[in-house]
Every structure is written in structure tokens, then in C-alpha cells.
Figure 1 (tube, rainbow, N blue to C red):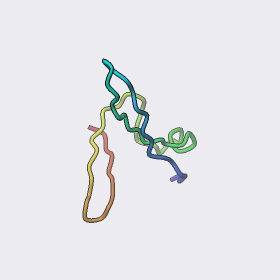
Figure 2: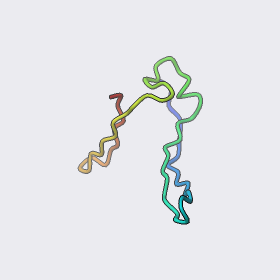
Figure 3: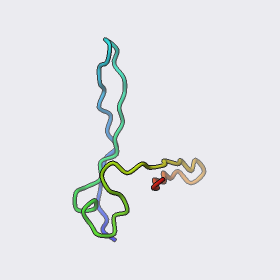
Length: 61
């Protein structure tokens, strides 16, 4: 499996005169294009936080 460094990004957006946070997780291109990468564009995902182990899990719905 390919491994690389990504980023957690906040890109605030304005709607109706108010600013809202919009968060993204950047997956490097070489990881996302690897044949083992489990997601395709527009796949629905479930995001889980394991507070005890400080881990984030993302899986297909």
C-alpha cells in the first residue's frame, strides 16, 4: 500500500452573509490513484472517531 503525507484543511465559505467552516482531508494524488485505494469520486463514506486511540476511520457506506 502506498503511504504519503496529507493535510487536514479548513476552507471557510460565505453563505447568506455568514461565514461557515468547511473541512477537508487532502489525500495525495499518488495514494488516491493507487489500485488499492478503496474510494472513487462521489462515493458516500462514513467517518468514525476512535477517541480512545485518537484515530479517524473512513469507510464506504
